[in-house]
Length: 193
Image (cartoon, rainbow, N blue to C red; front, side):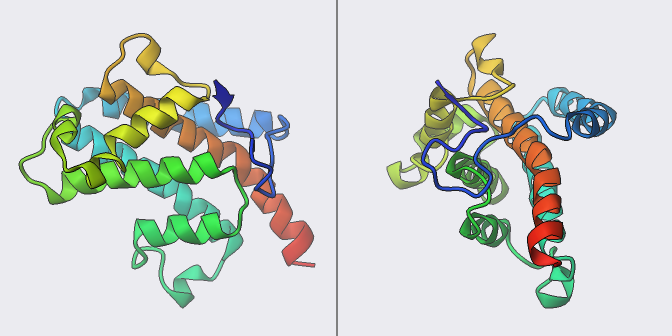
C-alpha cells in the first residue's frame, strides 16, 4: 500500500510530511479530535455519521482556504461556496498529494447521496446506485482505502463500508492537520513577502 501522506506522482508542492510541527499537531489533535470520533461512533444511522464526518472534513478544508486567503469571505464567502468548489480550488494549487483531494471528493459525494436521497440510510444501500454514481462513492471509497494507507485503517478490524468511510475521513483530516502548518509557512515565506 502507498502512504496516504506522500506525493507518489511528483505532482504537489508539499510532497511528504517531514514530521515538523508534530508537537503542535498532536496537542490540537488530542484536544479536539477524540470527541468527534466518539460523536461519529455514537450515531446509529449511517446518514447522520456520514454527514457529521463530512462536515468535519469540510471544516479542515475551510481552515486551509482561510490560511491561504485570509479575505476569502469578502470575495465569495466560505459558507456560500460549495464544498466541491472549495475542494477544486485547493486542488488547483497542487499543494497536497492528489489522493487527499480524491478523498475529499469521495467523502463529499457520499455525503451528497445521503443529503439528497431521503430513502438512503446506510452505506450498503449505495451499492444499488447507478454505476456513474456508484463509481464516485462506494467504488472510490474502496479503491482509496485499498490503495493508500494512513494512520487509520478501521476496516482492518472489521471490513465494513462504515469503517472504510471512517478511515478515509480520519486520514483526510490528518492530512489537512499535518499540512496546515506547512501551508502557513508557505504563505509567510512566499506570499506575504
